[in-house]
Image (cartoon, rainbow, N blue to C red):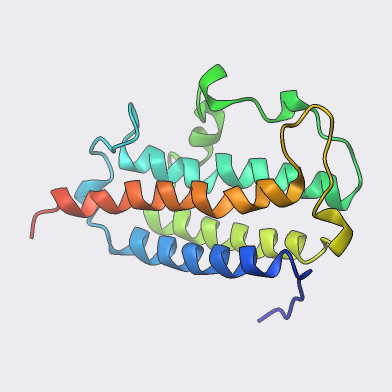
Length: 165
């Protein structure tokens, strides 16, 4: 197990993130195979596509943001298009379409480790970093990360409701 340390303002976010990721992986591995191709509460997505979003789009966006901060490289708004303005996940979902659910769960675990490595590189002074073209500071954005992921985990959990014994 890799030992990491986190800036004081990052530590609570990391704690929630790790707990939610463990919950997500356990949930994914517990859902019946029949659930994955049913429609999810997220309009126009199946549960498999919702899982694909959690395994591709969200990690990609956070990786871009954190890497930009760690490398002190400006991030362009075009790198993070709003989901409403673009075809959601099309290319990213293609990356995981042929994977088994267990392979996607392993991908989420791998992404978790990578994100923790990036989060451990943030310093105390990084909390208030803000770019002119973005509406919030890094600290504010990181506070939203667990809320966004929580909403998708809760949506994914509804797959249990339609499961047959």
